[in-house]
Image 1: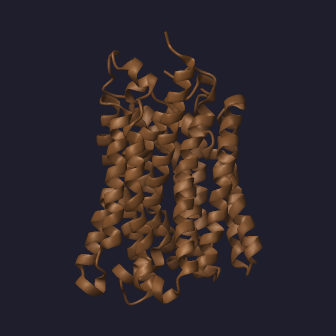
Image 2: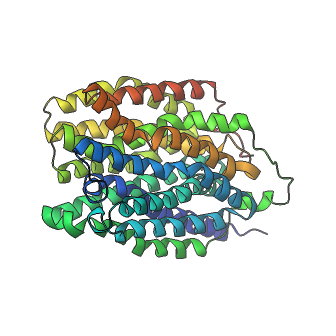
Image 3: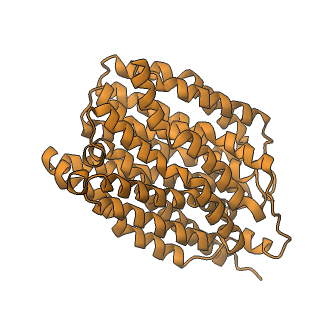
Amino acid sequence: MNNPRSDTLNRKRAVTAAVFGNVLEWYDFAIYAYMATLIAKKFFPAGDEATSLLSTFAAFGVGFVLRPLGGIVIGRIGDVRGRKHALLLTIGLMAVGTVIIGLAPTYESIGIAAPVIVVLARLIQGFSAGGEWGTSTAFIVEWAPENRRGLYGSLQQCSVAGGLLLGSATAALVSTLLSNDAVEQWGWRIPFLLGGVIGPVGWYMRRHIDDTPTFQNKTAAPRSRDSGLHRILKAFGFTVLWTVSYYIFLTYMPTFLQNHAHLSRTQALWSVSAGLLLLIVMSPLLGYLSDHIGRKPLLLASCVAFVVLPYPLLQLILDNASMTTIIGCQLLLALAIACFSGPGPAAISEIFPTQGRSTGMSIGYSLSVAVFGGFAPFVATWLIAQTGSPVSPSFYVIGAALITLVVIIRMEERAHAPLT
């Protein structure tokens, strides 16, 4: 006979380990973007700042190229051997990639080999991230009680935002405590090396958890070789706005604020940190709300918000706005992201059956992130360079919102249906 108290304890331990490990994973992956202006100088020197920054964000985007392959390989491990085995692999690979960047010699020291090393490290991180998102989402949602999938799934997004917040706050703290010269000489390495130090803590926590009851109950069932191409395409379209809004407004934004709103590096990082903090607070509340009113109302509200808000808010920021106004804009954009991030993990998990959930979700999500999200900072920088208008990235976000809006309108609402 099952012991309800023991089941609850196992659930808490498993979800805590998954969430903590996810925070560390996404800290490692995102810290690169928050140090982008410094990495541009150290590894991608060029005749002008725009070219150097484009090279840096191209290397950031390269980290997403291997995400679909990581989704296939690691997602399959998660579906065959279990979610736990896949999650141990991802956190180890991510830590290795982060340490490589933190220890890499600069262009001044070894020439062209320096950016090559950085690109290889980003490929390792991208392969890891490709399997992490889908597998960790499946793991957390499958551990959830039947009527709490939205709430539990939102914790996955809290951990992603938590990793980004930890990255932006660490970068801001380094910029606050050290002089500009110290940061440029050696201080920029601290956030990367810190990721390598704390990574093993997350690995140890994941090592001592059980796999999901849903997965264990399905292992004896016939396995579907194909989780459904239509499901993967649906997950792909579902993710377009999600990933573009994340990487434009929560990853690229510090660079945008420094270059076009003339904020200092420290001010820009703290501004983004405020938005991330609101996202962490609101995502569980909106995930919980989706368990009662359904996923689609909140997802549709987010899509509409990103059709209406990006252009006027970016224009407001550019019109010599005060720091208070800029943070207000950042908070409003973060709230719109939270409307998607709260119900999103449960909604995308409900598209797939258990036997193919980790693989199918990882492929659909990773492909979308690779195509639309990973190169979003590059696209934003390129659009501004081509048009001369700093507000031009808003059109990229609006286009993404329209794509995802069509997908969600056509989706079946499964908030109150059993997880298959």
